Length: 122
Image (cartoon, rainbow, N blue to C red):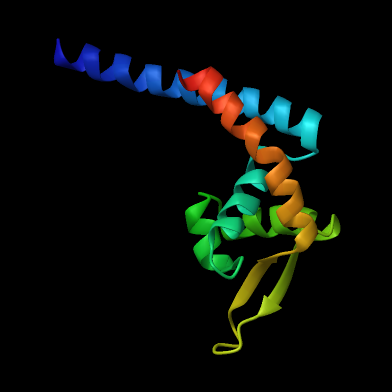
């Protein structure tokens, strides 16, 4: 029964995902005031050499729609963790840029993120 193994594998993947995301949501919110999507945006920005990314590229990287990403970046912007700026080469492009406060919050939350991943995925 090949189908059964395939479905079991899918269900195992979904179970691990749900447990991991749920644990991350609780711990990141409790300890750092961040949701999973907010943390992921900070992390993607922190990874880059300039700590900035085009909104369109960022939406693809964090698996959010443009409108969902805009709401997440809006919350981060309201908290002073991210700013938005126009692309100098293409005025239609908008960048999300990590602030010093955003970098500090990401660095503080990173050990919690990694610890929860180790607990839920090991």
